[in-house]
Amino acid sequence: MNYNEIESLLKEKNQTQLLRYYDELDESGKEELLNNISRIDFSLTDILKDPELEQKRGVLEPLDAVRLSEIEAKHDEYEKTGIEAIKQCKEGTILLAGGQGTRLGYDKPKGTFNVGITKELYIFECLINNLMEVVKKADAWVPLAVMTSDINHDDTVAFFKEHDYFGYNGDYVFFFVQDMAPATDMEGRVYLAEKSKPAMSPNGNGGWYTSFVNAGLRETFTGLGVEWLNVFAVDNVLQRIADPCFLGAVIESGCVGGAKVVSKAYPEEKVGVLCLEDGKPSIVEYYEMTDELMYSKNDKGEPLYNFGVILNYLFRIDELNRIMNDRLPVHAAKKKIPHIDENGNKVKPEEPNGYKFEMLVLDLIHLLKDCLSYEVDREKEFAPIKNLTGIDSLESARELLKKNGVEL
Ligand code: UTP
Picture 1 (spheres, rainbow, N blue to C red):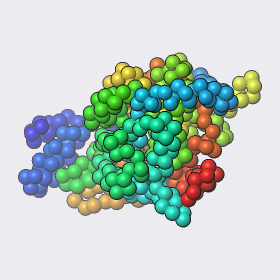
Picture 2: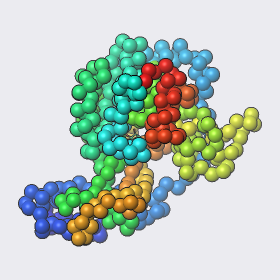
Picture 3: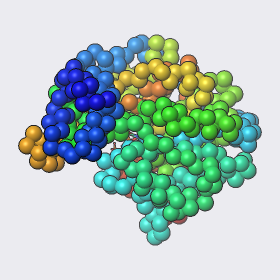
Picture 4: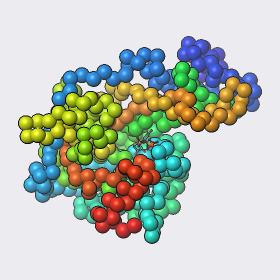
């Protein structure tokens, strides 16, 4: 788009502040700015103008999980089915590592964080070690695609190379970059991070499939035989990846997707709960939980909405293709956004001064035809590192790693 086209687009969107410093820029700066603006998806900010767009909840009902005891009883059967599929390269894995990890207060890619005490043990290394167990069992490599963002891509790729993929087969490791979303002031006007750069941040973990497809990886994966994708977060250092038992259970259930869940530790626990909404699978975030959802019980005295998701999902690729053009809800979160002000001064705010926009992988679940809720033991599979101390922290994860025999 040329200057005139951009200018009229910005007038229409009430975003002309983005051209404030245009005249001060040299030719390459001007080109860069126009190019950056033309890539912005302004529709992501519509949520501020029309809060009605915020997802309205339908009728919620509980969704029971395949319980630990049942999984234990059918373990060998599920595992056999899963291993067979993995041997035929029917499962690929997607590591979501495009986040900024702000709560941890670590400004490099979260996966490069060292959780070791007496030795080096990086988060990425823990995940690869977990995946290697499956590779050994199935005697087959499992393709792994790592989603990064503009902010951490180069560091992430370099880190894997520097560590020789922690013993993984580099031919089976792929990287792709997620899309970015604009960051705005409280009125929805996009900030400038620099005179030629609008302020942008990763657009959440919900757009991963589109980014994966746009990077050409769907062809690469399906070419290898992949039919299922196991999607997981970077920060749960205990999770089982490409878990054959989970894959086997989902295949045998006939469902198009699956979600690993844990039994909630207490009703107010801050995890999203997998249930049914208008008859389809859906995840209710902890901040949306009403007292009724938190405290109601079934006739056995068990909590009705008891299974929290841990961001470890299985999706059948043909189902992802069916739903990939459906629009996901956009979530606006108040954040501190560094920018340059109208006098050209750099501002590093102490308090939230605007919004970042995200789409979330948990909203994908509601687009699926069905989803198997699959219980795992939190002591063995749930050690997310969100903070340095306290709940879901480096401290709590180290404890759980030790309990599971991981040397630190
Ligand atoms: P979180 O919701 O914990 O976000 O991400 P975060 O950015 O890592 O951490 P905070 O909130 O700033 O402290 C859950 C998973 O989704 C990935 C993260 O890398 C993590 O694996 N993610 C998140 C992305 O891949 N892209 C994003 O834009 C956001």
